[in-house]
Length: 379
Image (cartoon, rainbow, N blue to C red):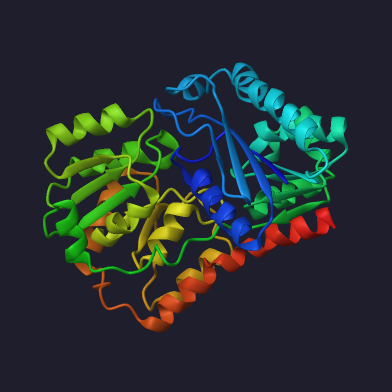
């Protein structure tokens, strides 16, 4: 199988972490996989050009790094050409070289789908597409739909996109769900985690992820400046990193840790009483999944539509709701955090039955939808 993705480790992000989890499953399954990606587009340092353990081979193509991709966000056509050109050239070479052993192309995201659809036409291989973001049908250009129509199967994260694509005539669409490494993300002692990070022993709100407006960073920063007796911990990088850094200089209760390796994030979650997660549309994102797996409650903007998974979490996992929804209004967010800081139950004593339910909800069993797609398409 050829797995095509613009972003892969050591890039940081939810998709990259998911692909790490997927590669681990593929390694366990013994499925020979060729991963074609770029040198980290959002980082300055270079990684190994090639890695091969006999099952997973990763080839990182040299390309413009240092955040060029992010700077092109307002110029979508240029960003498309920037992202697809190198992947198309090198994946074509890969297909020529390994055409006898590659029977399936797995494209990650829309840009990789463009590359995958061209390879499908040229080499007559099956094409599986994974979409990692939420797209309303109104945002999808007809050319995008035509490109997606070339896929033999499309994996999506949300019920909304599943419905929208089905209504557009795309019938080979299946919903899948991320999973969490339950050996890494599990409950931890709060005080020990705070000692590791050097945090004071007081109510702490953690925000993990890219520092962009869509993640609700700006309203949370405004709230943090108005609630000095609560520690606000920011983890990640992005366009708003400068704003967060400046706020941390002017406010002792705001702490910015920068990028943190995914396997070290359980310490961050463990140190928090509450985790800020911008849950998108109608699915639970990776930050929320990781926080819940660490037995930490989540506060999120209520612009989301609560799907069956979220309802299950709220109803069955704890006696008190584990997900707290607030309007996108700084004053209401402040009130909610202050209220929760006074009445949120101590999460140190986690009911083992409740945590077992979380483990099942976000366990590696969620990889079955992808593995089943592989079996059906490869034959």
